[in-house]
Length: 493
Length: 142
Image (tube, rainbow over all chains, first blue to last red; front, side, top):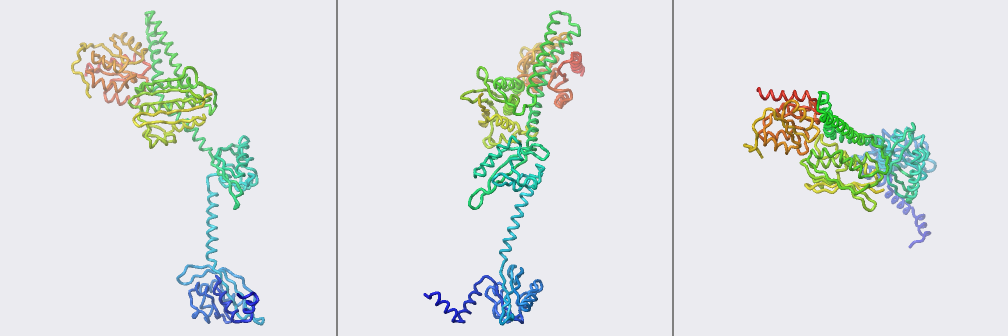
């Protein structure tokens, strides 16, 4: 094997070797190299150039540079003029980009440099070096495109997209966040996310940022932002962290959804469901109320028309008093039901009395439908922490559904079981039952099996929400044609 | 299906002033009975659909007052069953606190002729007696 010195000897001693080496280099580099003389005739062209230009050596060497490049390129880049200047001034001309389309091949983009090759202080020839940067240009363009698409996603998203450093200071703040809060990106950049939260939610936000910064995952949750106007905006946040190449957390990302409209909608829904329930009840109420009114009214008419028998007179007076008392009792029950929900205001209540009262309120409707209602409660009270009117609403929905499932009558059993710190309220009917295929959907809002105008599809969804707010659960067990059993499970007090 | 009893055994002869009051509410039966008796009618009462059908098979009435909501049957369904299952052809008057005057249901049952009249609760005595007399006179002078 030749030593280093031997190699250099060979190279230095032999012009032939040197020439061969340059040829090899020229042939193998990924650039196109063209050598032109002072009359702008091509002296040599490397393989890369010939391949890219789809020319052969014979028709290229000795040809005028103007014949080698297509006319449009010559006109557009004025390369000829530039090469001439290099000859005159003897200075290197650093490249410009040219787009070259040889016949039959896709457009290529080149970056070219013209190098003066001097001998005895005179520029003898010029070397035109062209690098194919088509791929590079394409990648750059693609990167720009992806970047602008991503920017558009952030820009036009309806959700709040916020990024922050690992200490929770805001870095980016998209237009949706600006719109919802009224704060511009410039105003909040560098400020702590925590400071934009409602004071009551700050500790939560702080601890989540801490967990994220340590690379832990955090569950989405609802935290309120304070808007520029001072209004509280409920936002459902999903957090994640960005990591650098070494896997270290480098930034925090928060995606937030403004829940203002949804909350308003939910309140509206709850109200509508209540109105719908009242609508169903209206008939029963009218019937219930007008009967005692009618008896009292009749008795008063008998007295007015001059009933003479003292015993009958006494009977009439008693009927009037009884009727008024009964009507008033019905109205009291209605008031208890329709009094606006205390909005999550929980207190210790006796579930048995709540259930008993609600069942009584609806028993008329059941009787009309030939549904026999059985009740089974523990002796004494069953205390839970809950909201009376909301629980009444849940039970009413379950009972109405049971009635609807038994159009030709049946048995409805309402029971309360209390064991091991849990309380179960069970509503069992012998109705049509729920098909397995739809069982998973029955708690979804707007899901209904009742025809148009029959149901809003909201009853069970509201039940589910209310029971969740009570930290309880609602489950269903059903067999088609046999009936359904809804079990509401709550913790005992 | 048709459960018509062509020759009820115990059907009493026609009594022009015999009224049947069907209502599950004792107070309403009490008031209607007194009102109608004071106006010269003979009154029988029934507290359910089953009881009413039984009475109508057994006796003939010149007019029948039907409550719209009974524990065992809807008043309108009961009217249909009366026409099918009993020989009763007497005018029927719907008495209810469940409907209002121009309720779609009421307009329909009146125009179809299933009921001769509708009286709302609370019952105004004079108005009810007028309805009963009108229904009877239409029946007697066709």
